[in-house]
Length: 321
Image 1: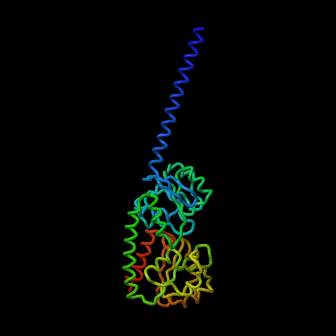
Image 2: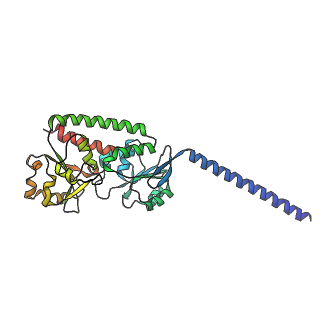
Image 3: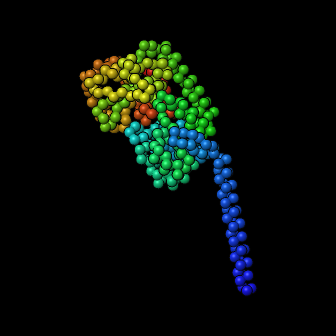
């Protein structure tokens, strides 16, 4: 009988101790959960809502456009993907982008490497619903659409999400001051001149012109240089950043000044156009106002790319004889 009582007493003691331990564990987890919640803010986005860290330290950028926005805000991402077709802006950024781990191409980021890097925030444009389900299991994930001519709004949204609004506003003010300086020169020296932006691909036997709704087109328009009127007539809505152009319709890119944007390996395709008699009839060709620029920052981008384009405009349109 004594043995039975002793067994019951031991069992009750074990149950009490175990229950108390579980209670402490659950309480500790609740505290941790509440603490984590208090250190993040809920942000709504196109695919739902995410609790974003107030001071993210290990950010993964799923495209170079969001990567450069983060770099401008002094939030260096630990990793980023690289463009599928255009050149990478990383070499142009120099030390600013040193040490950023490559996750492969935009279309197929290395998920295993993403997990190993243990990020506290994943950020990018055009994340699909399927990708979001995967990425949000790794870390809080934030996505937004990329409207090319609305790059400033995207920059401010990223800044707001990461607590860097004041920094972003200052950078945009500085950018606007640069725009006004170039605009003054344009108004004084380049009245009634037009600019065309033509991109050449490595694998396609055609070119295109970038419209006023494209990233570079919006910047050209902002500094006060108009695009050819025929291009504006062919642009029917804001969702049309480009129009494809065959060699036979090369007249569609005819302008006083022509910027040729080359993708990596596009030189051969560009040469086919250059060798055509139709090419020799272009106004910019006759006046030698053709400038070759890099697709890594002339096609898509944000604040750093926009400033790099302003650098080119200053070099070719202001300083050039």
